[in-house]
Image (cartoon, rainbow, N blue to C red; front, side):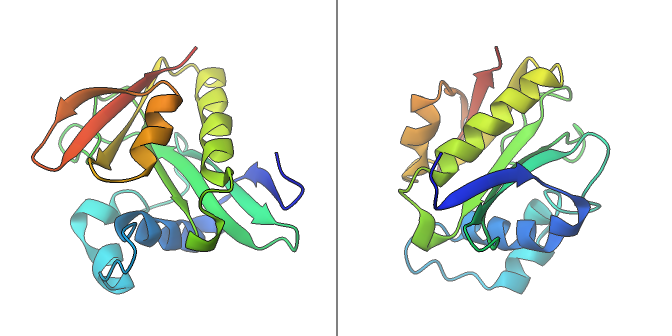
Length: 164
């Protein structure tokens, strides 16, 4: 881990910042243009935030040396009748990750991902899933951390990691 940032568990009060990170994840392309309110009120993105922090929710926040949040990784258990983009089963938590653009390519996402995977294992989860658009640079991060493609759509893949 870097001296420039540290990792702490996410708490209920982090809900607004998690919303910021959903927006970052949705607008990952440089010049990503979807408006914050449009993303946060859309059904497909709202499910990752609504009612945060439910009992099965877990996550971690990266904070800079001044204590400001710079990235987050969290998971939620989603219902089969209201699945997320990366739904892989009712007992499989779905991962969401976002990092502020200025902090990308500094190891923040990888550090958050690894910490969340350890936590998922400690919580007894056998697998964790996510969805990633095929041209997203984060796809190589997920592959390098052991995620495998389990389902493919027109532009995005569902990837699953077997938690050790």
